[in-house]
Image (cartoon, rainbow, N blue to C red; front, side):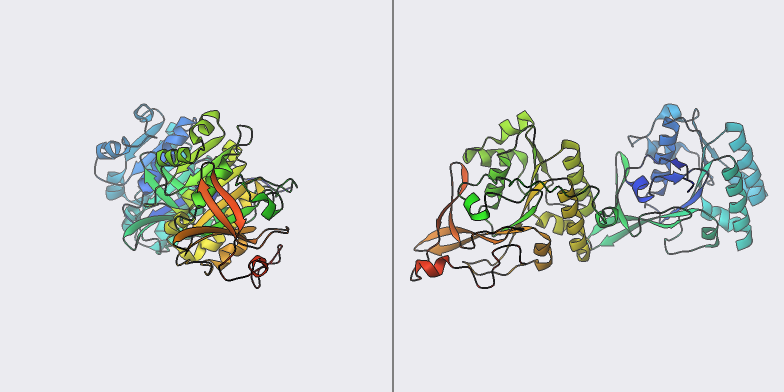
Length: 487
């Protein structure tokens, strides 16, 4: 029978997920990173979480300064609780012991304090200072090993904080059970913080770099979606009933509706009716089968005004619990933060219909664009697994008339269904058209049809007849266009 390691919850959102369950009880970890990366914040966030749940923590600094400035900085975070200091969390400085008596005396002092206070967690802030006092690499290893053996015997979890560079692999790395690296770097003109578990003895961990954010609540870690959801967390929902889109006149073109739990990509230039299409889709939501609008462009207030002008009462849908609006302005977003935010809302609210207004919002948030396809694949598979019918819009540039090229061929291949909204000047007026290119496991009408936007939203009108082209030719499928899920 496989033995299960006893885990200690860190209290840092997302970190336990990266660690595949949390810190191992009685294990030792190095938390490594440059100044300003957030090591002290991370350690204290863990510290106060342990104290809140009945633990006793010894927080040792190897600095000559008092702890007053540390407390001033910590008091700005939501996790800080002054009453816990001196009651459940003991801050002491052993700088003078290290300077005057050396590493062996420091170990003796730490053992004495841990035993006297019955601590379950030890934080040693200043491993680099202790290393400077050592005469050899063996001294450092011996120091870490002695602390480690005592902590393991008493089931005390140890965090060694060090300001060494994340690419600096030192002798003590071979001694500890885990290494958590915090990295802050400039990508273009923006600062990006990333966390990596480079060592996790006897325990799995999500590999690679995971973005994190520091805010008033402390540190939030966002595990990479493609690593966390390499396979979806639930089985794909295969109920056969078609999903009504809510766009008048579209159902006959797509076999009565969309395949259930499918992902539909809606492509078109600005002004072609993508958001209106989404509002029609969301308008059929009910409190029993709620919907989510996840957008980057329209604020909730502007969206309500736009919907009202079309005769769609978004406000009433919200009040009844049938619709949730989530807006992420197109500023500095983190790709995985957006993905987790979306999926948490889908799972927590049991969403049935989802409209993502602007896939460009994800693209702009990606500091490593090369991972977008993997991210989209994990997101789409999880949405299918959760039984969500998803429509996502993507703006296409240089779509003049009926010609155009697919800007993201790899991503469109991940979508189950592909719908085009186009526009062109004809006879002195701007005409809008809709065409279905792909529909999973379904027969569909491949001809372009006129689109009218007005009261009630977007409506599909007559089959498009181009001037000078016989109706039979205009109604024929485009060359190479599939009439079922052949692509």
